[in-house]
Length: 468
Image 1: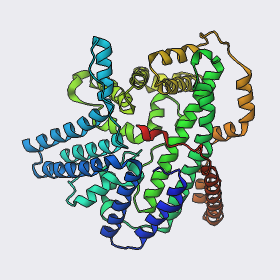
Image 2: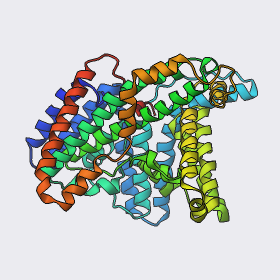
Image 3: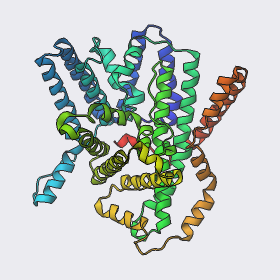
Image 4: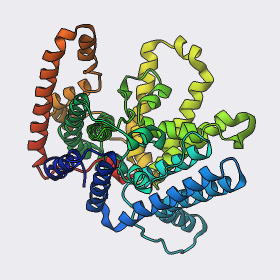
């Protein structure tokens, strides 16, 4: 089950909402959310529902063990066991086939390659349980004493499948006591409408154009056609994933949970470092907090940690060489910016700085797209460099821009913080609150209606990040 389905919007979520607010005690409300969270997961991948429950049970016990023997040898043993079990399960399901396939290629072996299914959301809920155990060991949080409360943390349906990677530290207070205000409901429903429209109105419409320009052999596509396709793929990824995050944050807010933002208008960045402070923030902060300054690299731990972070970031996205190359690619550019320094970056003319970082980002999305292997990636880079012999421009590109001009303009416009101006007006002029609130409600309702009409169309696609 995904958020961008009529079944979820008009049946599953309303029933969950009514059952939740039919009770008042936090423990009863938690029970309602657990039932609906497990049902939500079962609708998407019932064969691995046991894994979510088992993960919650094992990490609950390990967390209690870490808390009981804090700063003693058994606590370290519990933490080590937890890391091995959690990361071992993730690696086993996600990378076993990839590793064996490459061993066969490198050493001319014939080891059978298992076709293991990937449990839904495993990359996300595994990182949340890992962060919980580490935070318990570091003394940042107390271990949860109620198993069902912890089960809700692990299985909470808005964030289990595609994040954000919310930490126990962030959710702890809301798991035990929360109140839902009128503002929470208003903000929550507004975020749902905005997120759904990003996905259905923008991302899904862009998807067809991306397939037209990137779905075929790169050797037959013009240079500007490939650039056009990759730029639209970047926009599709942004609206798809940030749309999911908006909906997840909005749904959680309706139930009284206050999650951190996962995107902050990343394409407005001044450099690559800032881009990654604005894009998939929860993943970036996870690696920054738990991997960046590992003592393994001694005096060069910042550089070594940075390369390790970006190797792992690439690998986290999938068992494919293009993701690893993508991670190293960004790691090298971030090292370059680190070497230049903030003062050095400011000396570069702003226009040149913006142009260079946008080119780096666009090429990065091109690398990310090429899951077909090294040959596909090479063909794409040659096409982007104008070296594939097909020319720079053709009528297909011109026709596509003409036919989709309104969609393209809307997509580019929505990369900007359009809601910031109304917020500033409301802050300075309280009298405008009512008018702006009414306008916002009408717009949200309009977006929901348009999205619902489009969701009837069978071409509506799942969220892209559910496959990670």
